[in-house]
Image 1 (cartoon, helix red, strand yellow):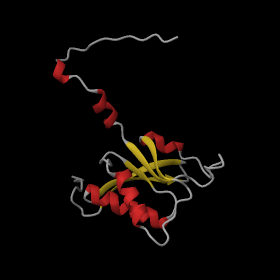
Image 2 (cartoon, helix red, strand yellow):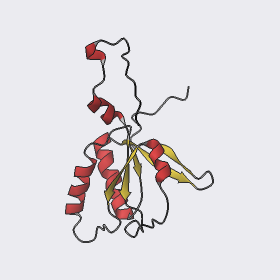
Image 3 (cartoon, one colour):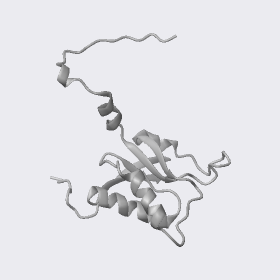
Length: 142
C-alpha cells in the first residue's frame, strides 16, 4: 500500500521544476564495457559502488573489440556519448584501445575537462578524479 503526500512550497508557477529537468540533473556513470562474465551472470567484479556517483550506463558489451575497422565502433560511441555532461563520470573498464577512444571522444565533447572514477583497493571504494587536460579550469588553492 502506498501512502504519499503532496504539498506545495511557496513557488511561483515559472519557478517550479519540470520533470525533464530533474531527470537530466541526475549524473550518469558511463561504463565503457560490461564486466567480463556478465553474459554468464557471474561478473568478475562488482561495480555497484560506482552507482553512488550516478546512474550506470553501459556503452558496450563485454565482447566488443576494435580490431581492423574502428570506424563503426567510434561512430557508435559518439552516438552513445553525445549527452555527456560535466557532472557525469567515466568508469574505465574493458579493452584499453576502446578506453583510449572513449577518453578522446569525451575530451572533445568537454574541451578536455571530465571526471573519472578510480577504484581504491585499500578503501574498497571509488574516488572521483577530475581531469583537466589543458589546465583551463584549475581551481585556486589560495
